[in-house]
Structures are given as C-alpha cells and as structure tokens.
Amino acid sequence: MPEREYLSLYLHIPFCRSRCNYCDFNTYAGMESYLQDYVEALTKELRLASTMAAEAFVVRSIYFGGGTPTIIPADAFEKILSDVRKNYTLTDDVEITTEANPVCLPADYLARLKCCGINRLSMGMQSADETELKLLGRRHTLEDVAQSMENARQAGIAQINLDLMFGIPGQPLNAFQQSIEKALAFSPQHLSVYSLTVEEGTPLERMLREGSLPAIDEDASADMYDWVMETLPKRGFNQYEISNWAAGADFRCRHNMQYWHYRPYLGFGAGAHSYFNHQRWANVATIPGYLKKMEKSEKWQKGKPPASSEIIRLAPIDEIQEFMMMGLRLVDDGINEDEFLERFGKSLTEVYGKEINLLVEQELLERVNSAGQQVIRLTQRGRMLGNQVFMQFMQD
Ligand code: SF4
Image (cartoon, rainbow, N blue to C red; front, side, top):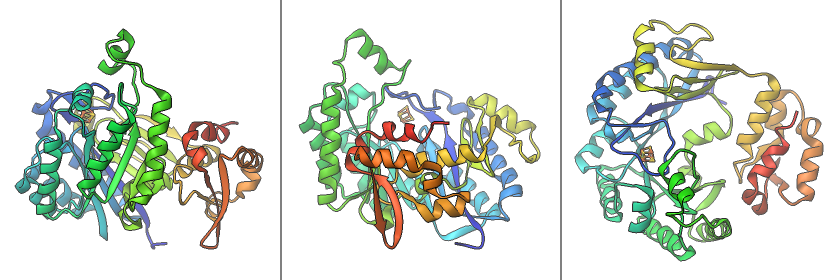
C-alpha cells in the first residue's frame, strides 16, 4: 500500500457533434458555445476539490469521458492537465485516458495530447459493418478507425482500447465475428465488448417499438458473448472483467479497476459521479446548471461538494453491497476474502456465507485459491447471468 491512498479523477466532457441513436449518456449536441466556460468551470472544480483531497491522496489515473472529450481543443487538455499537476500529486506512472470518437483525430492533435500526458486512448469503434454503424447513428466509418489508429501510433500513444458492441438489431453472429476480427487486426492492447442496451426514450427504442427494426434476438446475443469469451483468450486477450479484455495485466484499465475495487474517485463536470469518504454524489446534470453552481462556488465545504445535486451518505452495509457488486465484475480477481475482512472488519462467510454456498451449488460462483489467497468469483455461466448473482448480495 502507498503511504497515501490512491485516488482516481474522472472529467466529464458532455458535448457531442450529434446524438447516436442508442445513447442516453449525459451529453448534449449543439452546445459547443459553452465549451470555453465549461473548461474554466471544470478546472475551478478540480482546484477546489484539491483543498480537501490532495494531501491524503495520490492520483494514479485520470479519465476524460463523455460525451466526446476530443471535441475540446488540445490547449484545453493542456490547461486542465497542467492545473491537475499543480494541485495534486500524481504517481510517476499515472494512467491518463481520453475517450475518442474516431471521426476526426488528426495526428498533430493526438501528438499534442500525448505531449501533455495522455497515454491511453479509448475509441468507440462499435462495429466494422457500415449498415450497423448507420443504424446506431455513428458518424464514423471503418476507414476512420483505421486512420485514427495509425495517427495514434504516430503520435506515440502506446495504449489503445476499442469499444465494440453485440446484440445490434438484425446482427448475425458472423457479422459480429468479423467486427472482432477487424478490431484485432488493428492490434489494440485492450477491448471492451458490450451488449447493446436499449434505453427508453432513445430513437433506437422508438424504432424497435414501431417495428422499423427487427427485435433483438437475445439467444443470438448470448451466443455472441459466449463466442467472444471463448475466442479472445485464444488470441492473447485475458478477460479480467465481464465486458473487458486486456493483452496482458499491464494493459488493464487502471481507472476502471479503481471503480471495480471500490476505491475512491472524484468526478468533475456536469452529471459526474463521485465516491469519496463514505459518500456518493452526482453533480447537477445540465451544462448551464453546472456552470451556474460553479460560478457561485469559492470553496469546497466539507460534506457538500459545490456542484452536487444529490449526496448519499453510505452506511457500512451499503458499502459492503456496493463492494460486492463491483468486485464480482472482476472475473479473474474476484472478491478476495482477506481484503473483505480487512476492509469491513467481518469475514465474507459471516456476512454472505449462505448466499455464496447457494450460488456455488448453482455453479454461478466458484471458490478458488489464487496466489495463496482465497477468492470467490463468477463462473463462465455466472458471467452470463451476472444480474441474478448480484441480486443475491443486495437483499437486506
Ligand atoms: S458519441 Fe458517445 S456520448 Fe456522444 S452521442 Fe454517441 S454514444 Fe453518446
């Protein structure tokens, strides 16, 4: 353990050029006129938070998410990261990721991001099939992904993740397999492969409801997930989380590992979430609302983050349940019994012995000895039925 605890910083950039058909993230199209003020507010929030967090913590990951963070100019990245360095202590090997839409990532822009510290790029490829990309409302093509990969390499960004989706309406298994093959041909270090979720109120949900798209075939989606779990390890990618694969332990996403290990993180910007000091909170979601809150704030009052709209004080049982929900996502590491005892002062068996025995009997969980440590983790069947497992740990 370091002398100071590790902390992760999440910076939300809620701007997009247009809205994808499936998207219900907190992001806005056509609001670029707020960009400059937004970057100012974000750096102010980072500075204020440092007054309560910088002494006790050392930052080991920073993540620009969105939205489309690469909508902001390179000098905004430079300003934000220079402010972070002035106000926080960073580990020497700090991971700094930005999400990126492959539609426009010129080499000189990426080179400037690399210069100011960005060392990981997470690109929303989603599919290699032009019809599927159109159906999803994505603005990029497969050629854009190829060009962006090339530009990122030229810029010297060594770690690249590609996001891919399965369960797209009308998507046959072989189209999904081809998308994965094309993604592998780009030689990324990390793949995030998600099942498409149909969110209420999105154009995709309307098209499915009105019948202008074929219904999603749940059995076909399960086959795709099964296939990807079988295939990627044979191609050198270790599944370390329900939806994430890395080409070696060094390429696991450190930022997301902080969430899954239920360690503290601070989120900045409109709608960003934080978990810190036994509290969870969410910032006000709209851009104008966030700017207004930050304009009026001159200090970080204890227990009352300046841009928050909702603060939840967590009881010990809340934290135990959230720890289980997050930790079980780590299909390799699982929940470490010693860590549980150290953190909560009770053994895992004392709190969840009955539930774990039942899930082991149902072959949804397994007990394993990993490097001398006792852990429980999902079985391959449990990965398919994750929600059923998680529910067992949410009961009173
Ligand atoms: S680019 Fe991402 S955040 Fe923006 S609309 Fe599309 S899915 Fe949503």
